[in-house]
Length: 111
Length: 115
Image 1: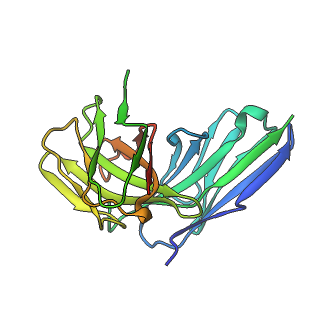
Image 2: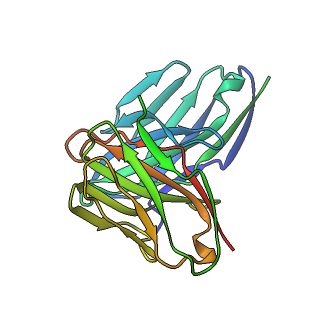
């Protein structure tokens, strides 16, 4: 069964147009939820880790939040350099060494 | 800082051939892992290791072998390549998951085509 579902699959924004990416998860016993950024032809790059509902993390124009069922990656006033695929992953408490990734959201920011 | 180094970057194989994808890290990480990334499927865990001499299977281990003789290296072996193994392969390392060190560092990937 799907453990991590990301939506939308693709998102096109005008520069400066804020939006949110969604990551919903069905695992019980969440140990951690992770956000990564992946540029074309490169490996994913770590952005945030969230451990408990209500937690928030920020970095420049990005803010990640976590509830008991989902996480959001909010992008405020995006710039073209924010264009990338954003990946969500979970680490389950019962299989503490295995990460489960979503299929990602491809973000394009148009100047 | 080199981080996680994967070789080769590109490889073309014929069905039935074998090969080894190399992965090395210089961060003294205990945890290393291999993923494959396919369109619409996301990253899927093949094998992982929590330390030298210890390996375990992930979601999609069939057709792949691993070993971990040193902390630094974690090669992935394709025993008899099949077209279904055409994919982009990523190696990733971290401090030990479950002990607060779950941030994964990824290599730049190996694009493998099996004809």
